[in-house]
Structures are given as structure tokens and as C-alpha cells.
Image (tube, rainbow, N blue to C red; front, side, top):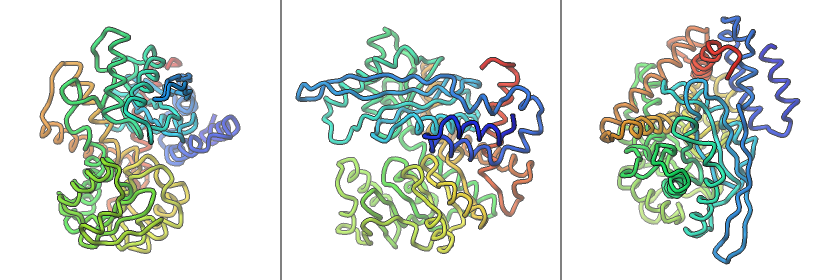
Length: 448
């Protein structure tokens, strides 16, 4: 079956899973030459196998709210591929969580994890539970109930979940406590734990820092530096603010952050004092717009941050936040580099537009792999019962992001997707990640 036939099958089989179909098409769009280069890929139906999860675990989660009322949510774990290591991928608690969203995220996770060079397969999970407006006790009771249902399907050498949207250190700690209680084992089954009981330093910073390290390598490939580059960032959460922090450290000028209510624009640029204030503001769930009263700048209610002149755009909020009209604005305002801090924040039309205009575009599976890379390093630390310093881990993160960049760039050039002046990172990342997983599947034969 050809790649196009696989896509048609997926569209017919899962017509109500648009996010998943989008993810499959995005990978399929660039792996054709690599797929054709090895006849065993087609013979063993490698791509077709990769588009179907190994299994989807679907379960009910019962828990009690503070008023003693029984609440019911749905939970999922999509175990997509363990061809190169234990299943690995975050848990997301958000009302928009669905099987389609988790399949899209899990499919992307296969190749993202492969790109890190670490032995990790691809998975994703979560629930339609909404943590917003819930008390700490309600969140704790939900986490206990969720992991009580999931615990039998995960383990340090089987499936190692982590956090994602709505799941931070607090939630991971509650789930880890219940896992220990149920299994009577202390093992590295969840990553993102607190430092001091199995967690890793730099995990909080890793995704944002890693995206900027990838950007730094992109700019260096064009014989340029980060110094003085104007950067537009969307979002104001963990990834966004740490991306702003690292970009500022490297000499760039970050002009924007945003949230669901609007965009904050500071023509003077963010500095560490401003970033620290923003971190505290978001931690206390206070309005982003209060920044203007303290530091100046502009608050643009209901607007996105893509309307300003800049060199770099880093969408770090959520999937499909950048459409074709936004992409046109970015090109019009001189943006030369787009680095995805979120998972698939550009929709297909936006991706097509920026690539047609030869904007250097880094897809999330490559650019935001820093978080899962440090999760992989946490797994290693748990296995050997040792911790590493922040500086050691930061250097490892830099090395991993450089390797991802270089491998994606090499794969792109080798397969005719660009040259030294323009590198098609999307195609390169898809090819490099796909080949690592596909070669393992070929080696296994028809199993896995």
C-alpha cells in the first residue's frame, strides 16, 4: 500500500478525527523519497503500521468533588509505538481532550522521541477533566482515581507518562504517590516528579530552553547570531516564559507574550526582572494585562502577537493557533524563522504558506523536543539512582538539540529538501525520525 493509499484509508476510517488526520498528512508529505529508498518499508507496511496505535486504553474515572457529589470523566492512554523504547509521552487534563487529539499527539511523539536519540517510544494520554476552578483536594482526588485505573498499563520499562497541559509537578506527584501505594514499588514510572524524590533539574525549563537552542542552531546555520534578533512569542505559560528567558539570555529582544485574552507588547523588550514578574503573575492566575501598569508597553485585547516587525516567531500556546492569515502577517512583518514551542501550532495552510515563502520553519516534533529529552534523562537518573547538576543537564540538553537540528538538516539536504541557504526542517525532521523507527520495525519483522 502506498503512502497516499494509507492516508485515504485513515481518512475513511477516522473521518471524525481531524487532528490525527492532519498529523499523519504532515509526516506523509515529506517521507516519500526515504520510504521508497528501502523496499522493506512498503513490503512490511511500515507506515501503515505506524498510523495505527499498538493499543488505546479507554477508561472511566469516578471521583468525588468537595460537596460529596460523584463526578465522572473519561480517561485515555494511547500507546502508539514502543519500537525503540518504552512508551513515553505526557498526560493532558483539559476539556478538549479526545481520542483524536491524543492520537495526533501520540503519533507526533513517536518521531519527536526518535529525534532525541534516546530510547523512548511514543504515547500520549489524559482526560477531559478540567483542573480550572477545582480545589487542590479535588485535583488530588481526581489524580488518585485516574492513576488507579491506569497504573496496571504503565511501568518504568513499559510506559512512562509525564505532564502536559493541566498536568504539572503537583499532579504528577499525586499520581506517583498513588502508583507507589498500589504497586509497593518505588520506580521511575512518571517523569516530571519533584526534585528530591526522583525528579530532574531543568525539567521545568527544558521545552522553552530547548526550542531556543534549536533556534540558535538554525540561525548559526545561516552564519548569523541571536544577538539583537526581535522575537514574537505566543502564550505565557511554562514553555513561553522559559523560551523568553533563554532568548533574552542569548541577546535576543523578546517583544510579546500572550494568553487567551490578548497580547502583551513591550517595544523595549523583556528582561529577567520582567520575566520573573510574569512568572509570578501567571502562577497566581492574575491578569497578564496588569504588566502595562507596572512596566509600560501595550495590551491588545483579543489579538494575537503576529502583527509586529520581527525576525523570529515562536508560537508556544496551543495547536492550530496560527492560520494562513497569521502566516501572511508574519511574512509581511519580516519574520525569517518560525520555531514551534507548542505541538503543531501552525495549521496546514500556514505551514504551506511559510514554506513557500522560504521562512525557516522548525516543526514542534524537532524544536520542542527538549522537554521529553530531559524526561528521558530523568528516566536514566532514576534507573541508576543518581542525580545530575543543572549545568550538566543544561549542557546535555544543548547537545541533544544540536544533534536534532543537525540530523534534520542533513536528512533534508540528502533528500533534496533544501541547501545551505534554505533548509526544509519539517521534511528533514520527519525523515530522520521516521527512518529511526522504521528501521527498528524492519529489523523486528512483522511483530511490533
